[in-house]
Image (cartoon, rainbow, N blue to C red; front, side, top):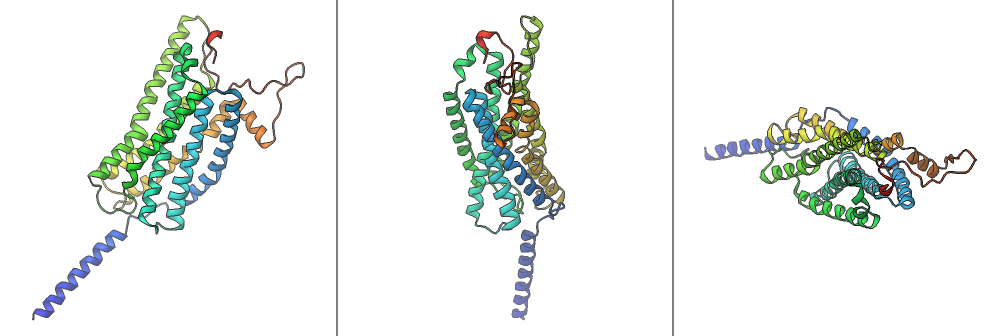
Length: 340
């Protein structure tokens, strides 16, 4: 009598183990099917060449004009390229679509560090560019002494190093797609730190600085001492920060929902929301080229020069105008003694 009971107990235990194992390996379905893979393939196939072309154009403009803002935009483009390589290609296409996440955990965690590092660099370079524009527009007399190429390069290198350091703790970031357990204390701390680093702090900074710039422009224009207008760089900066705030908001919200409402692994609706949030957020890495082309004629001319379609600008007497007279990063009109 004891043996059958023991066998029955073992059978029940084995059945429970199978059920638990089935729960662990049966995540919520991907409602979008192959759409994310197709989307990321198009994003990488279009965005990576476009960003490389943008980097070449900005590097030429930076070498010709020696303007700090060009170096910041070049660093922003470089970080976008790294984001596309590490997150879009390695993270989504290689691991998910090709290898189906059948890779060592150490590799996944190392890739996570690179993903977060490149992501942090992209966002915080934009923060530094915002501060650079604030100094140029609101403190024009001090701008030359505070912003010059050598110092700009050091700041950019410091931002990239700091981004890598802040990315190291995310080695312990859990995989939201296949982790059936509720986020633990460490996981929640990392997710909140991530939300503050990539969204709440930068967006608060963008809102405050852009508001100060707009109010300062309005106040100066009311004095009518000299005509003021929003320059190309300021328009580009405000567009970049606005697009960033809009595209990254859904992903940030879904991460919070994943922590406190339902996990991606258990609820297909959260899974769907996370897919859409990631797709929108990563779209931010491919839009700057089109924004630059829309705003700046000098950037368009540089792109034409790189691809061999340059149409030289000529003056009324038929002479070529110097390409260094760029209006792409021209700040607000200030007195001649402080022109940047």
